[in-house]
Length: 110
Image 1 (tube, one colour):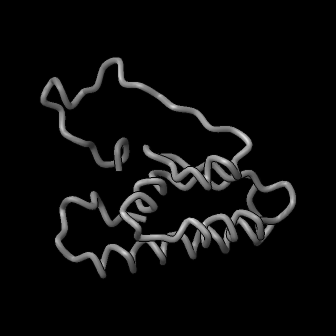
Image 2: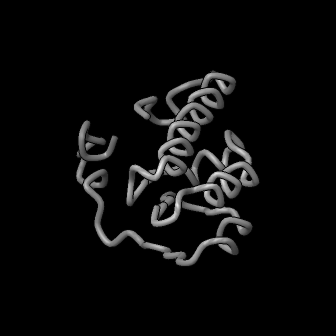
């Protein structure tokens, strides 16, 4: 939700609070029934750094409204989340603009 890259800060408590706030918003959206699709981009990174508890994320997914699909992205998904999911995909880089000197772009990468 706009906090940027986790390696840009040295304030773990702030990162945890930001991740919890973002997931709280996503949890509310999933439970509301107002959305057919909720995308939680890079949530697996927040889980990898233990900014969120996988048990809480799964509980939020289980509480989503009927007809609401959730997509969770990011590397290194927790095994518990993979076991819960209907679909798990691993992607591999073929070409990336970073290697050509192009830094992350607002509106595209964040």
